[in-house]
Length: 351
Image (tube, rainbow, N blue to C red):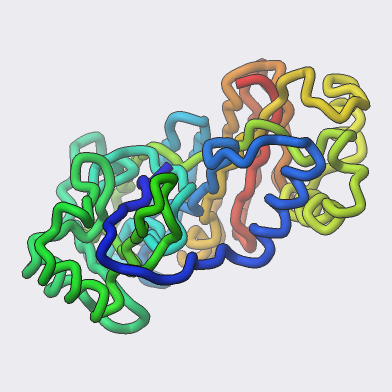
């Protein structure tokens, strides 16, 4: 969980509401399964992807080798400058925006308040320095300077979590007046809780030179944000509930869940209401469409998915990727590949 709620007895206000679809799903799920309302039953994944370059006709992506596992994503690109002169491009790795007003249950891989996915990159095998740019935003307003003036972190996680009750009264009042603190319900002992109300925006940026007539190999890796649930909505005991019908339909569409996938899941889960097989979900989202910014398609693309165990079911929309299962890992390849959709991967099993 990204943060604990912050409390103080000084300020009062209503509990902010979660997005309608999320609330509806969670209420229906809790009713259907008789689960206690525990925040740790599920965590939402963040959609992260690869490097972003400006659109160019001067550099081609010869190959992309993408490996996705629950603990690490590794991407290896090979680029070719198709001109007879050096080409310099701005390269960015945008980390997902963190909306702190709705971040009770977002899965963050690291407690590093700047590089919270432990991102690193190499060029031709050597570590590449990056400039990290991080800002705090409320709508279109940049409030980074105010937070720094008050000596508060832009991303309050880990050891930098903000304890509102410990802040000077003048600081608390100013944060509320500026919209940086929002009421977030009451604690068990009746004290008002507060949550940060800004969005933290982070990106890593550098300049990359592509010399003529030579391949450049760029590799980066990071820890993914993995969504998790202590049960799965696709179990027959839940899937057949009318209340969960729209959410089940969304799963089937987003992850291209087939009847064969559900039949295998039903064998493992059984027909009971309770999750006696102790099946869980893991979800990873990967932004793939930025691979379409080059001089032509990706000439050789390879995707490897490692679910971490041969007994785990995997479903995603593979499009024109051709599958070649190899033991525990699943491999998919394509030639002259131009990605037109992002990846959403669903894994179900025991974790």
